[in-house]
Image 1: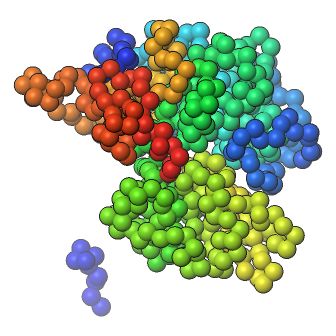
Image 2: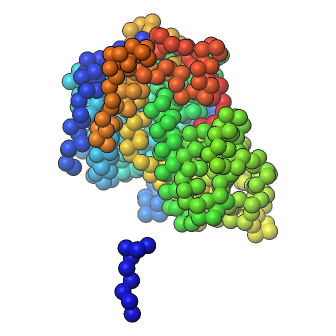
Image 3: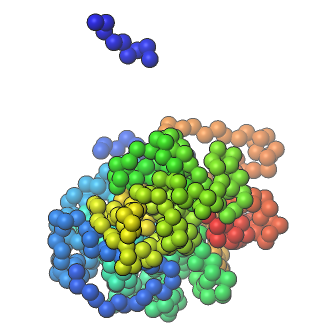
Length: 541
């Protein structure tokens, strides 16, 4: 028998000296080796990340102690009990995960190394509400190295990594979060971060707006000492613009979500890689030939569609915005209304930032074994509450996977009870989160150190110079070399040789039309509110 041969086949923002110096240097970091119901504190004060009914306790691993962390008396090795995590004894495992994450977050580690001598956040008291993952831990420890005091809660009841939360608590960070919180737990944790004797926050880092709204609702006087808010999600940004429009925003806020370094990298590339991971871990499915409808063709939708198309899926897109709709068509996807394909698709993915995108009527018409999941920040996109009725049976298949069974035997597969799939059911690429985390850190530094009067009580886009700086910090990882403009070329383009190279309205869907709609057009544009963002915040993620 023959042997087979396989070989045939410019703004008000001013960069500090340490930032300017480091922008011209190659990063050295790349060489580094390596149970009991409780009376709710409050019902949802807005459309929060905990809006729908949840059987959160069942999402914890069966091996975990069933005792609520709120009923435990835990102390770290230094004797502090100012935290509430699942199990402080997991701290060593969490520390290893944080160390792994540090290797893939070169810019944040470089920022820590270069700026910790200057301590640009000395005196800052930051209260945060984000996903508590190894990547967030690197950000928190960086903020601490730059001089800040931090208290932290989770913005999603399923995304906390218990071992990472334990490692942070062991290091002295007051962290209040665990995987599988109830709605009551969720608000209790936020309250414990904010309402502490002898500690008054002066900065907010939020993801989704729940922390900001809680302070507005319960402790409005705190805003007298708060210098600014940094918000990274489309949901939270939309809430900030609503407050601004109503004249109720009493401090400056940075819209990180619409910065280039968040929108074009985190939303797009992070979701392009993590959507498949989340679906595989929960369903073990094969994507080739599957019919998928993706609701929303913003950056998140674009990432999801690209990944599924590459795996051989047949992808449909729904959109409300004609510009994003045209992009979907030109990328080779068929634009449909959800009602047109709901009976035939195998997977439904929401990523619009809206509410009731998938209704009970849609759910009733789905085919047997259709998989339903959400890639948007909040759990409002799929009407999960409508499925909590006596005629439907819920069957737990595995962690964060439920069969919802109709009387005739039809069933759908619901993932993470309609919450954020990737951070609830899988992991996300650390390097991409390094870009977002560095942007968040610089936004905090900018707002905290801004002289009085630079920012008014409104919502601001990040200065483009800051966006470009964050991007430049990540280029050495790829051994990438930027081309420099000659004096003649810079003069011809009307640019500074060192940037910014893009106007502040770059990335916005309406492009240069910003100036005619009330946004800034050029020159000193750090402090204007882009009209495009006002509009886009109501559309897709």
